[in-house]
Length: 182
Image (tube, one colour):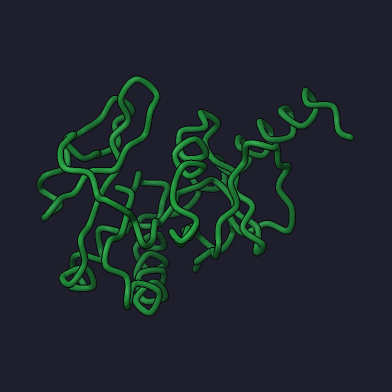
């Protein structure tokens, strides 16, 4: 069994490496890859009523394009809010309802929560094809995802170079049901 300290160290090194690679992505390349990602997501959104999204940083696929492409008009949409270290999702009707959060990431204003999320799109610094995820290290998404319904489909969203063959995992890490990258 791996020493937890060395496993944490491996994750820390991997996070630094992925952050450095993300800094090299030009705005034009990010946009092109984001459009491709949203097109891939189109088929996965069909038949889902309640969808959890994330507001992207400049180092993540731009999921705001899902609104621009009209792919969300027939769905109930929720975005996360992080208060006192706890992630919760709240319903929104438009992107304009999002406000800057504590980490500079746009988030929902606490309000109505969805009864259930049919599908949730999850950010990460890296993913594997089998659904392992490397988050930013605070555990917000892992804590939230460990409490969602087993029928909620969890989809990791990233750029192609963030898809790795292996990521160190710990017992609290929650696997994705699928990963979409481009």
